[in-house]
Image (cartoon, rainbow, N blue to C red; front, side):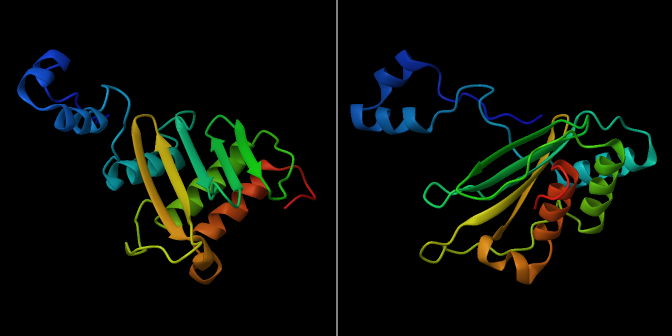
Length: 178
């Protein structure tokens, strides 16, 4: 796992060598050890997914999270873990009643992630348009993590993250909910 280091030799060293304004800016930028995890190489996540499908890796350390939660508009955060545990947060959107995911459901999800190459970012970076938000997909296996995103308004057109989200809903929610 990659972690950001603490940097700068401690508070007393910091205050003695820089002015008050500079120290305040540096303190805002300093990261406490263990507080941030950097993305893993996409190939590591891909290899983990292949290992799960081949039966060589335990699916328990695996999870995938779909997240389109927006501070003003609400949205959905849905996580399926390799052991079947389901977590969700739904704000101002209809959501199904969560249930444990079956082993076959988890494997079906892993196969779709492989098919869609869900570790590869395809959308180009640009400034958002007014009221535009992103839908994110985070895949984890143990300490390996990768995240991709698409503009929420482009989900249907792109037919990538939305396919994964809809499968996640079918796996994680009781029948009759969508």
